[in-house]
Image (cartoon, rainbow, N blue to C red):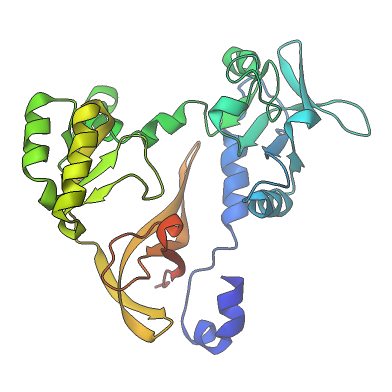
Length: 299
């Protein structure tokens, strides 16, 4: 956004575009709101990073700086008497909230991967006892499993006692015999994905695939049906997009920034993922897609 404002200052002056500079403050408020109930002071918050070699380290550093909190690595923290402490030049300082940017498997070598040197030994015991809050909560990544998506309407009914406002995209679970039969018979019409896949890898876009590719993918599905789900080929929105050749239509998908703590906070902006290749439906950056700053106009 800062780069866009420098490039098009007159445009930003003439249009009333909602600012996004408040995001770090919104994130800080959200992190403070999830502090342990036993915390009776202003919570001490840290951002836990894997380190400078991580590809997102700049983002970790930037957010910590903007929020005015410490950026730490696992070796900077330790557990003592069901509490988490940070090593400082003034002695140990208790930590109340950890905004973690480390995968679940690496956050505690005593509970998960024993070979991890990124996490804090004993962290999960403190978390279970309520001595520290972790954002995002360990286990939240289960929502990335695409098979879980099919249960969302039932989750809403069970936990909230409400009917879903938005309908799910029709999804076939290949682990079910009837669904498997349908998927294999309609491979050329569907998008098939690995339940644990991400980044656009390991999936088949039926309408864009050859008969040979479909036959090879069918063998993969038959070898392990429970590892796959299928959905209709959705027509992503398209909008005029600035690309190398000029302005041209490209498929897009919008990703908002939503924070949930004591309240729901929505940033007045976001990133729109773009399929940069003409005719492509794949917006993942790892597969040649890109991102565009998204402007929200004020009233």
